[in-house]
Image (cartoon, rainbow, N blue to C red; front, side, top):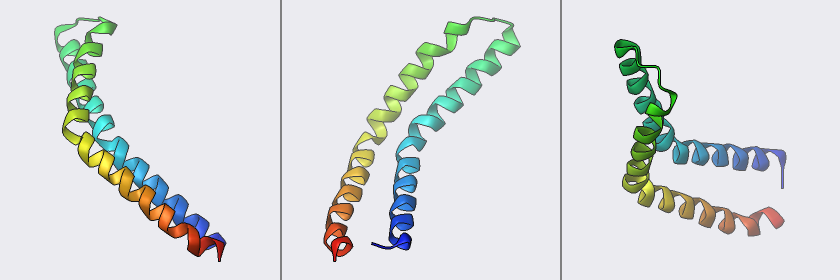
Length: 89
């Protein structure tokens, strides 16, 4: 196993992690920004106001993209297991 192989696996791992976390993080960011904008326009300074919409939004994002996330993770894991014999030789 060479340094190039380790770096390639690490890069692929980080890209998969970025792809898997993107729907949840973007949903939470957009909802948080919208609630923050609403709070600043109406001058309501309640910290717990953004919790429920974010929770619902993240739940919906998981329902919509969960199947794709699971298949992406399964494909990545299968690729890693198929790579093991070439790493040991």
